[in-house]
Amino acid sequence: MLSNPNIDLVSRFLRLPLEQRQQFYQRLQSRGMSFAQLPIASVREDGQHLPLSYAQERQWFLWQLDPDSAAYHVPGALRLSGRLDKAALQRSFDALVARHESLRTRLHLDGEQRAQEVLAPAPIEIAESAVDEARLKARVEAEIARPFDLQQGPLLRVSLFAVSEAEHVLVLVQHHIVSDGWSMGVMVQELMQLYAAYSQGLECVLAPLPIQYADYAMWQRSWMEAGEKASQLDYWHKLLSGPQPVLALPFDQPRPAQQSFGGARQDIALEPVLVVGLKALAQREGVTMFMLLLASFQAFLYRYSGQQDIRIGVPIANRNRVETESLIGFFVNTQVLKADLDGRMTFAQLLQHTKRRALEAQAHQDLPFEQLVEALQPERSLSHNPLFQVMFNHQAHSHSAAQQLPGLRVANLEWDSHSAQFDLSLDTQESGEGIWASLTYATDLFSAATVARMGEHWLSLLRDAVANAAVHVQDLALLNAGEREQILYQWNATERDYPQGQWVHSLIEGQAQAQPDAPALRFNDLSLSYAELNRRANRLAHRLIEAGVGPDVLVGLAVERSIDMVVGLLAVLKAGGAYVPLDPEYPRERLAYMLHDSGVKLLLIQAHLLGQLPIPQGLETLVLGE
Image (cartoon, rainbow, N blue to C red; front, side, top):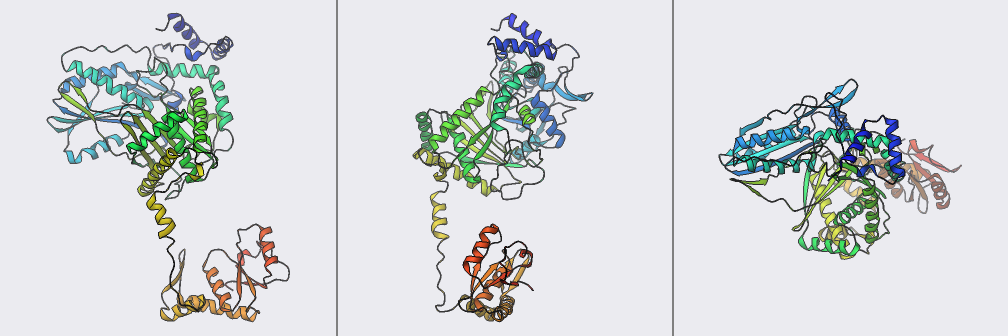
């Protein structure tokens, strides 16, 4: 139990001006005391300005950018089978709203400052409607996607869909600015406790809440401003300062100028034998399952991107204080876990690297992500998230099962997510029954087929790591047996029978006679028939012969990938010479050496490359297309 002297100490601290708070903080530090170990006190007065937390400020900014987005909604849906007592349900929600200020909070501008406004307790509307089973999923998804107005509120919506007299679906949607995933769990558990009592005519007394979310927001700001922000920021600044890499995965579509937050989810099945192997590997290497799966995701992203600096966002519940465990509010924080990968390190070495970074991050977990972004000042872009573009979220708990209430069976209802906050997110859930995983992806960037293939590749990597943790990260298998067969053998089965004793240009000439109008070349929007290709190559070949090209004469061919490249190649062959390919992208020193060492007698070149190549004095040049 927290002692009153400690509460009084914190209360005095929170009322001090900033300079005196900083001095107070330094005195605590010099005595080896941590302010984090002291309780959170409520020092609010009626009518006092209630600031937003750091996390809420970022949510406000994101909402203003796109008020209609559902990317930051916190939804839940419960299927209620049996006799539903609607009066008890209404009373339960009203008790929840009275208990948790976050459920009756809206935001407003107080001058130039954003502030929270806590409204008086009032009955909450439960929107009831009938829906048939066939349309249920679509109705749930539509309700989840319906936008909030943060300034008007309410920021909790409750809908009750009647599928039949004995079958209902309860949909709860909160905005992230007043809630998080942990909070949804708190709400559902307290709702069931209240309903269980009220539906039987009993009273329900929940343990009193020592503080409310607004108290936490004021305490957090006072603590961070006094000196904790600078203390924690030192570690993160050393780790993450400098150029901020943007993870370049092989997207199916170019990244749009502004994220739409449209998304979808791909479930991944981990077979029981793999789960057993993962648990054994974690035990052998002295790491948690979180660390193992994070390391596997880091290795996967390294293999897919080729980048060595891999940065992944990892949410932490931030519920390590007794005062916040049972509160509804936006407590979750995000850490940026950085891995410095080298393909030659073994997977076992990567595990230890990841373990060390995870433990360091845990020791510096109180710095709000928003303060880290402000300190590092990454280049801002509406096209991607700052500091990281992929997320990993691991939850270790028992897999959700149906629960029993008086006269009701309660089970979670699944629905399809249509939003994504990041380019790619890997979510894993661990329990005694197994491990479940899913990839949530931005549909602006990835196709469903690509992400399904990604899931298979991640599983292949896990299996290989379990089989031999001493394997180098660069050698971890991504492809399954079918893909290896296709790439190594089926795609390489290119052997064909061609007429013996005929030259390539002779075969082209034969095709020009047999099918003159058939397309021979396509490049961007251009197309060339066999007849036109042959005519253009012949014209150029005559010019080459006039310039002295024939057997044993080397012709330099300096062209970008284009139709001109093929015309030039065929013309040299028709003239009886041999071509020396010169890639214009090569360094000038390399090209100068090739031109000198090869002994080319003539250079075929595109006009716009004349000033780029180090052409030796006296070397005859012929410009393609003239």
